[in-house]
Length: 385
Image (cartoon, rainbow, N blue to C red; front, side, top):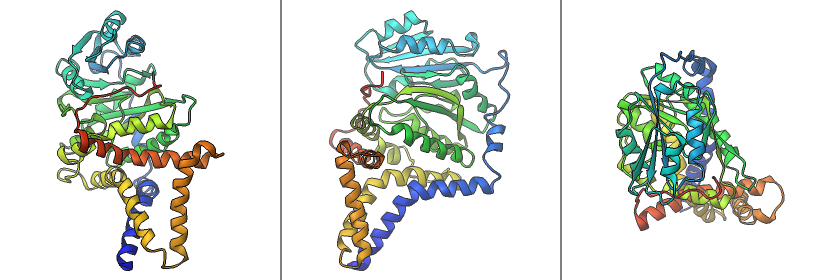
């Protein structure tokens, strides 16, 4: 029993440390071995931006659900981009909105406004993609504001025919609360920049991204462009690229409780993506991309269960020496700091609370999927408008 407990303790603890700390270090070593990261981005993202007559025709699709507060500003932001107006089609896809979203989008100048029955975000994106005229499809959240040159920089890497998906950089505006998502996202973007220089990024974001129209994949309502497109396109021989100079801003959920609820909703469809859509199957992946996907995605999704295994195994090992008492105290200390963070001074309790709650959101999302199924319905995150 003790030998088995020790095996599972070291295995689960090692995988947790590896996916969060070891994996970025391995990526950095691989990037260095392959000549550094700068040449990669100078060769792709740093391409000379095309003249107006040469830029590809782009359809920018904005899904919206009860976004009357922000949709006019989003449309104005899109139409003010440094991109030839005749080469840009703007579609707003209203997914069962009960407010004035569609009316305000038309008044603001959107080329096409779809008033769709409630079917979820992905269903709205699929409907808009069917009517798109551009050779490239770009996507943005209704509350994301792009920098003037963002679209040019987002589409520039598509000059490489091996690239099928490009994700820009979203910067979260601090809402003044206790959410540490902005700090985590900077870490995440550093990891994705290294992935992009190697086998390709393993996930995107909903604020700013684009895909070739002929590579667009209509997903089930429970799917996610952010998680599904990079691995699905990799199986078709297309790489996913991170373009950090294509920038957008989005207001951050102000509270950690709100961030937990947002991530919990995002994780509801995770099981369908990993198993149903084939993320788990390595067929079609390059060895490097398979390594990235296993390290960055699959192990992250297993993190809450690995923590449970490590905790229970550690409990069984308490009679085997001082070291296991120390590791058990550390685990209890992290949980205690997370629980008491609202009343404790300093940043460490907040970091512990953020880590525990965001890790728990994965398990909570899968629990919701098991109890209620995955309908694809979406909800706006409170405080982000």
